[in-house]
Length: 253
Ligand code: UDP
Image (cartoon, rainbow, N blue to C red):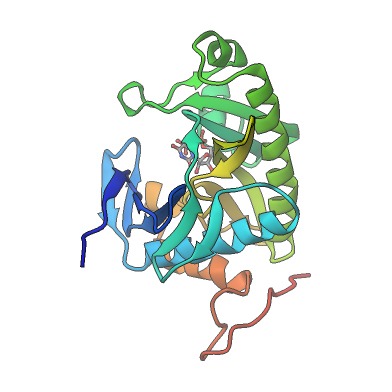
């Protein structure tokens, strides 16, 4: 049996060549990193949980017509995805002040924002992913104005959908990050959501208690990360409440 070819290894995921041209296999590792990999650990089961949560979200996004790279889950840790040309930007959407925004602008964490704020960060570990403006994005040719408009529209649709999805299970979507890629269809190019959407890339707070159910649990040593991610999966109806029966999403009043 031929060994499959690794295409790329990142901090939390590995990409392998897919079974057909134009596809890749995305493998979710158990590795957790924060602060540009200055803090590292291996969290048993994190990759499995993120694979399932990401599948759930991307499938639902496909269902409402938000184009994304997900094709299907292959096994516990892997999903088949459509290959695309990744735009080297992190697109962050914020609903409530937290993290770097609170730090930079001195706004208390938890302060609701008057409208969703979108920010771009240039993906470059050596530079610590600096925040950039649309002017930089266009001047340095990372994306065109049309690409930017498409990314903003996608990010806002993802925000609306995810906010509702999480509110329905008693979780507040504070902020999240997406990455986008280009796919070419004949003479046309389209922007799609790529990478992952999981508790690694979102801030998720319990609506009633404010408990953090995301990667801040690891970043800030607040407890057991895989318990927090399991709770998100359970509420979304992905993990059984108890026993082997998979329950549907649980409405929280
Ligand atoms: N985020 C991410 N990857 C990054 C940086 C940020 O997924 O490399 C997510 C992060 O989990 C949060 C949102 O983007 O949901 C905003 O992060 P922020 O700018 O506040 O930075 P942080 O405080 O995470 O360093």
